[in-house]
Length: 420
Image 1 (tube, helix red, strand yellow):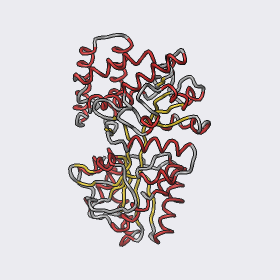
Image 2 (spheres, rainbow, N blue to C red):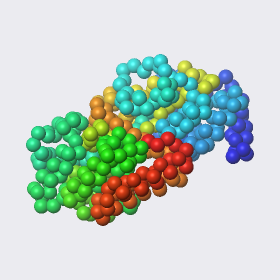
Image 3 (tube, rainbow, N blue to C red):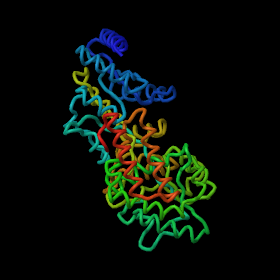
């Protein structure tokens, strides 16, 4: 680690000499690192910024958070900061901010755009505006429009698409029963195969919706209701869910009419039959509408050169039309509501409309995937194991979740991350 630190420090000092007085704005990012995305970032985003403002900028990629942390730490410690702007996941920005590496961006005004409130709230850490949101990825529900004909009494399609309080987990259960009766079999699907993302639904969607937390209330009375609910819902979940890793194909084949999955794993269904499907927010539970966002933000290091120009780059990257370009080329979704109106009609418009409706819901309970490193697999396996034991095999709920809660607390304690 020391050797790597010294190497990065030397590189940073060389960059300082080469870019004396901040002639070029260095934009360092762990995102858009794949070759095709770098071409887009440099040839479209940075070129567009320079063409518009006359400010020269360079897009510099870092393979991971650790390399970025080493670089910034070296620069700040040597008081030779060459990095003007940083792009990284929320979890990495949070950790680097804890080391005192970022300026407070409170007071920055970016006109003519409305940031999603939940993302704005997450960008303020301990009262400090650490970053400006740039883009997001998430998981949503997909509805074949035929299914809207079988909604339970009192629930409308507008309630579902608009994240009304009537669109709840109880409503999903009633809807699933109606579909089962009408089609003589289950029409609700989840990616429950080993390579599917079922565990994300369990820890990041239904848990915060019922308890307000992902793991902190795992053995609470509120959590008991989760497993009681899932036992009631299971008969209306298509049995092939256990072998499905993605929902696009079963949706296209109409084996299911309502599904939950990552946006990237349902996109093909929308591309092939955009008129057949709607992307809708997930249901709400007693504590709100829990959902996962993979948030990416822009931060300015302390003592950064060209701070004013870095703010201009932030302004440029969060403009609605630029947000649409990011969606089209990188697959991450906008974080300003105005971008929805700038997206051309088609599959991406359908996806973005649903994503923005979910993240902009009044009862939003947005959560991030815990930063547990090598223990991440053990964390997610715990949720899957509990589901299998209780819902599939019929184990006692309270005994099972008490044991699992102890295991989860031990994981967080070992990693040194607060229980979420």
